[in-house]
Length: 281
Image (cartoon, rainbow, N blue to C red; front, side, top):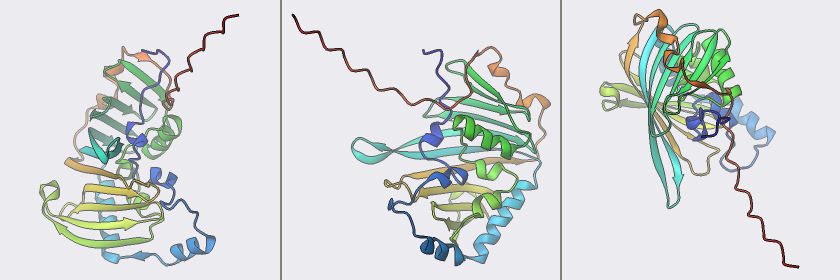
């Protein structure tokens, strides 16, 4: 194993699974740049259904009212295959949060296992299978930490929009359309209200608990993706304001791991061309 490699912290981001902040990096599917007049017209007349926006606000209020929370996020994302139809991969993350400055994410699934711990001062990324750890100083709030982790190491959690201080603002900013779809009794084992939202970069469907107003599922397609791959997050096992032990956000498992740089994974280098034998003189 290369001792200088960095942890592949961006498995989800590399797959394009980014609701909100990551979506801003996408480009229109047509590959053409909209004219200033077209952009102005789109922003000047958003079609935002009042019921859909009210549900978004209710969801945000339910999340931010809790000073601590725990939930499970099952992420399914598509990736191109060599035969045409997309392949689906899944990860499971156990998330624990305490406002304003503590977050723990333990991720398992089809990619490398990883553990992330943020205690208000540092963020630690640990790869248990390889026994490697990366640590860096972090800002004093969850929102600022999420941005710093993205900037430094391309880390993006697909549920980032709902763990910040303003979930409504994270999702509603830049919307050109929002509408109410109806109710479902299939997702999350409960009744949910379904809404859809769209911007210049992403189209997303959200299932929100009819009673508790908690997010149960988010499904997104990015306009800049020519393959229109689908990215899906299902939320379960919600616990609001649970009692959390003081040491819950310490990276205990990484104490004896080998330290490496906290940085974005480097793309693989192409193999060097084989040296041609010299011509006989």
